[in-house]
Image (tube, rainbow, N blue to C red):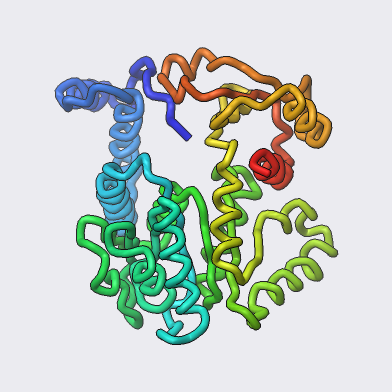
Length: 348
């Protein structure tokens, strides 16, 4: 999802006119050619954070997180147009185990299908996926841990080895850089990543993306997980039935890759323009296809219908993927699970 780029530069609002002027001067001499409004806001917030009395520990945490995110952005930037799939799973899975072998096969299949692979840069499933995809098609997004080596397994090139000190900034990078996810069986860390990913999709904090839960033949890890979700969460109305459908469970590498490809066969991306949700497509829908989408997913619209549209004015201002066909609707923001279903249905 492209960000809006050209905005009037607002005052810094540090609470001190002298500091405001200094921030404006710094922005003016920074050499930044776009998004000066966001630079001004960030610098103003840094000044206010310090003036508000944040202690050294808080400032150090924020400084390290910003440094890590800046470095990660720079390392991913040369590959911005390449689709990437994150592969999660246990660091304790050993070579020769069925899950390890399947992860190697999956990595190879993803690379052959022009996906790059992002892993946590550690042993087990992470190393297996990189072995399959190859060093030239892999990123390692690592974290410092006292009990497990997380330095890319020695096979991820240093320019694509992205190091983090904190889980929250590492997770943000995973979610921002990935267009798809495949999750193998794992422990607390794997389940934490899975639940956070599903929470972000369910609440619309990230755009819809395909999520594959992979278990080797004969392994019921994710089926038992889904039983828990259905019996303890869905049956108690703690989540909706649509939320259960955010994942695809399989033991087939071919089916996993097919699921990812189908998701993006027609759908490209989306963004908000005011209260309108714009869905960018790889090809225009026919009249019959658009009518079918409106019949099936009328409940997603709070007013009007799902319609074709030209790029809206803010998109034109941002030069935001203007060549792609579009759909627009006033979306019911309580229904992100259903939105995921609609996006997935476009590619079938």
